[in-house]
Length: 383
Ligand code: PLP
Image 1 (cartoon, rainbow, N blue to C red):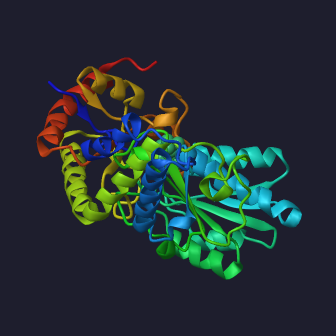
Image 2 (tube, protein in one colour):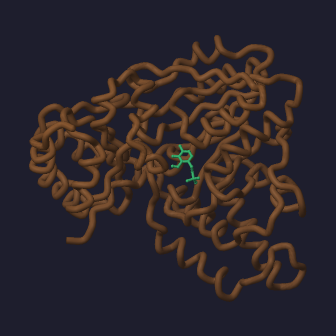
């Protein structure tokens, strides 16, 4: 049986059209984009074409797009870059307890350097309350950072509302849109965001490339100093093939967003309803409506999620416990704990995240395997 990949929030396969677009930049168009000759010009054109495509997808100007090595770098740059640019003007940040480690890690780094960081709670459905954000912001606050969609539960945050209040108070808003891009619309003005982090490998592009949208006029310390790459803000010869691949993935998304969203939601609902109908003791974690169309996070009572994921792996199915970057960490998910789940419910949580190439037959195959696997794991003596 070929494998069934239901872990698209961890990463997605590179789309054939993307690979086809990238290959010439690894074989023939080998120039350094900073060179003046034909080879250099070809590489530069590839990068600038990709920048225009990513900008079109996000609804911004190409000059506001800065390519990075991925979502983690974009998040780190946004947070540390604003903090560094603010200097002594203010040393306070507001974020949430459910952010990705890329944001939480950058915030902890700043805390060690004397910043105060407010980590806002979420409700039982995993949603942050904009009025809490408003309350937490004061005159020393230099940045608000709230993710668009959570990677574990898929829950969408009221980012546009938070953006509006951030705007009123003159505090910039950073949005980690790594998971939402390609699954729901991500437009910088609709989000009222000043900084937006995205990543290619979540949208059918290659790993190791992403982008940070920086609103024109925004004060942000450069990430790496050296040459004038990326508008003089991130020095270093560009990952030309990767960037071109990201641009192609963005172009494809722009044409398909609505149909992809509907198809993903249909498959996800088939899976979720099938599980609830065939296995006892299952709860859905997260908001039933305000969530990504491809994600379901389910707690199986009396089952350890790592055992379930390993059991599925033996059957040729990829699912996830916790987030991909921490799935070998047995401690309960910080996201589910923030939503008020007890340690046992959090320990039994598995994420299924569907992608555009999954089929109904694959979902039905997983539904056929699940009851027996769960029953077997429930018979195991508790450690
Ligand atoms: N932010 C979120 C919400 C993510 O889900 C991820 C990756 O899982 C990242 C940031 C990091 O992106 P990258 O893997 O490109 O570094």
